[in-house]
Length: 228
Image 1: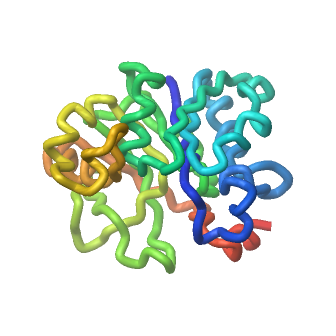
Image 2: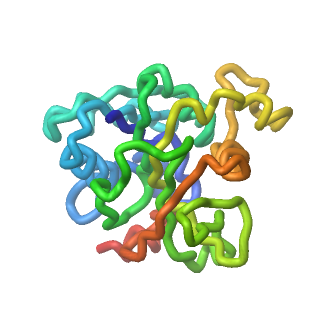
Image 3: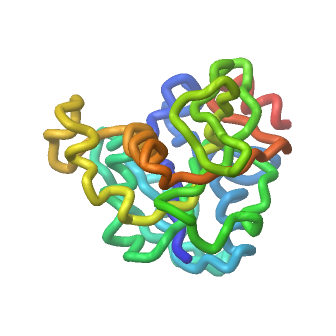
């Protein structure tokens, strides 16, 4: 299995820390935040990891190299001066990820979820890890049903953790799903992943699970400091 680590964001809420250091390279307990994910991916047996970059992209390779210290092969998917959002970034990285299911994780989360709990491949087009709603996202993102299936809306919505397993076929009809949304006309296109996930949910092609352990969206200096 290959993996994608989302690391292209500008980290605007984390400024001034991210004026000179991309958020995934900010230190948490003695090492870059992204390193915690790379260690877990290596422990899972992943060998090839794509890291998408944009903001301060030139800082990643000097800090991470080619992944040798983790026994990984890192491949950098540079998106240009403006990040392509989650959907556009994943689409841009697909040639490096191949035709098989792959794992994707947001670089700017802190989570004790064990990647070994993920299925080897999603039953449909995607399998998502959800967490309890934090204070900054009280309404949640998606509904997880008792049978493990997911829907875009429901009475008990949970928050998407930023950890998921995907099939490239999720993007088979992305233009018809995204439509005329701003950014879709660009080359490379820029769009969010959520509309594709919602469409796949409505088609019964997304499953999920509820992780009740530790999870933090490291989006502000205060949340970063709270990690110690």
